[in-house]
Amino acid sequence: MLKEKHTLRILYRFFCLFFLLFFCSACQGSGLRSELQEELLSSPMLGEYFYAELEPYKKEVGEVYNHKNKLWWDTFASADLNTLEQTALKENYDILTAYSRMKQYAAEAHIAESEFFPLITVGASGTSAHAERKSGSSERTVSETTEKYGLNASASYELDLWGRVRSAYSADNMRFYASRDDWQTAAMTITANIASAWVELLGNQAETDIVKEQIRVNESLVKLQKVRFSNSLVSSLDVLQQEEVLASSKAELPDLLQANLELKNTLCILLGKIPGNALNIDEHAPLPDVLAIPDVGIPVELLQYRPDIRSAWANVQAKHFDLKEAQANRLPKLNLSVSHVFNAGSLSLLLENWTNELMGSLSYTLFDAGAKKHQVEKMRAMAEEAVTAYIKTVAEAVAEVNNAIAQEYSQQEKLRLLEQQYVMAKSATRGALNSYLEGSEDVMRFLTLLQSTQDLERTIAKQRVNVVQVRINLYRALGNMYFPEEQVFVLAQKEAVDEK
Image (cartoon, rainbow, N blue to C red; front, side, top):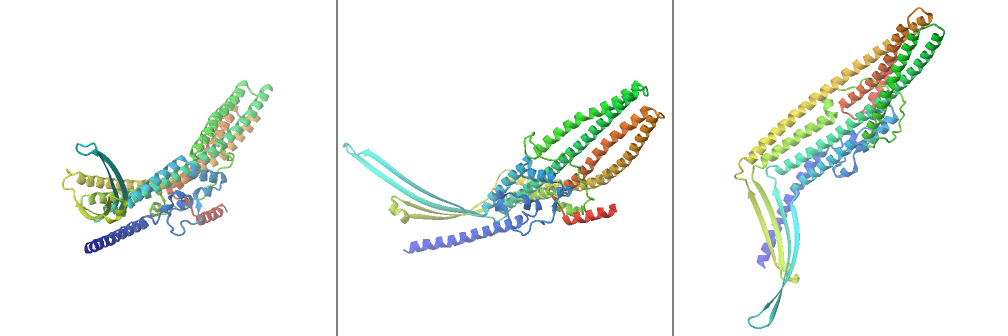
């Protein structure tokens, strides 16, 4: 009786200690998870497009984005573009691949988190053995049946004395955040590519319409020249020269039609569709207007918005935790385990015969030929590499923004000068035509000016596309999916004042 009470007292104390360790580990895991995942929905894009499968990783952190903010492509005020972007965010192959990769890292973080808690296993067994043998010299057969039943339960737990488990979990958690930012980077890249292809498609159609109009004008001029030739007012050479201009215009058309098909195929791929599917967009829509250059802020704000920079920084942190884990692996490990086993020859006595075992083990690698030491050196080198990559990513991001802003000014100025040149070229062509019809100028002068004016008209159409493309590149460089509505309003008011 006293022995049983003593055993029960030991069991009670042990389970109290084990529960305390379990509670502490749970608090450590939950606290760390709360600390590292508090900003999971900090990105406006996540608040809009986060999928339901990652529900365990969602955390209520209040209003995650301002509904007054606009997605950057909304500044182009195109329902077609908005539909394309929304479709791509849900069906694009690269975005779905990045999302699946993010789910993998989320699962790995959950696996690492499980080490904060004890490993508890239970089992049951039962055997029945039947034997027959002859006894001595007699022919008598003796039968014997033996039964054995068992129940067992065990629990084991590693005391995280040096922070190995915490570091491993933190590293996997930061890799999850890096994959989340990579997913956002993919989304930002795809949305920019969608907008670029859409603008190129509109520009291609506009240029095609210009070429068709030029062909119509040149055909009229060919007819005019033939009439004048029949009246002996011009030579056959003048007719041939005008026909050469017409042929030159027609030669532009096949490349434009081919480019139109290629752009549609590109959009289908970006939308996650098989090429050849109808896009249901207005190809003859005018190119979108470009607002004034947005307030790009200082590089500190750039760090806040660009997902590739956030991903690079998360990788730096992950490598830092990998280094701490490798350092902790060189230190001793302390494990606690408890097991309770019931064994009996019959089910009725199963709970009467039991054995309880409490064990603590301390293990330390005495000799491994420097393997763990070199593992620490490897992790330290990888951490240094991640820091260098992060600095490079920041520098490239700042350069991309500066280049995009410089292109904004230069390309808009180029468009303005081309439009001025076109006005003068058109006036000169009209004057040359009048002089030619009056007989005071040679036809070659008029044809040269006409060809130059028509080329300039197509150049302006391409430059208008370039201006919008540069703005898309600026949005891509800024890395922010949202464009503040208040800022749009202020910039629109500024444009109205400038126009006045």
